[in-house]
Length: 124
Image (cartoon, rainbow, N blue to C red; front, side, top):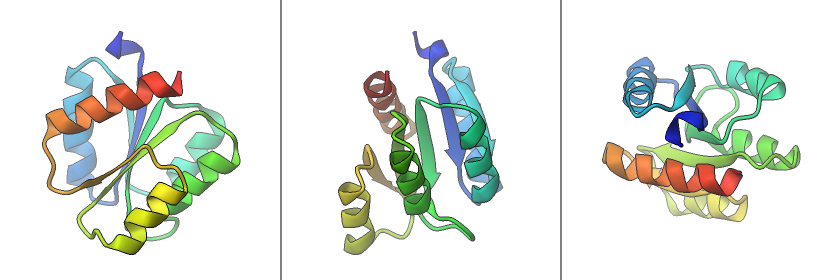
């Protein structure tokens, strides 16, 4: 079943995108990764994903902007925000705007995988 889940990874650090993409492809997910948030938003206009994993802090639109965009489109895509710069304000904003989860870096890949599977099931 996992192989049918389509996820987007969005992080301005290339190495994070590569690591997450490699991990989830090995687990049989369909993955598209982006280091530029505007390119990711453009892709979200063209295609629906089950889950978007997005970094919180990025140049241009940030993770909250991506979350707000998806919710404004009334799309069932679930958003998991990852960040190395957690603060109460951003965590509350993510919860208020209905992010599926908010995960602090560094995290265990297995923990993220469990969240992605739960989020993808909710998306469907």
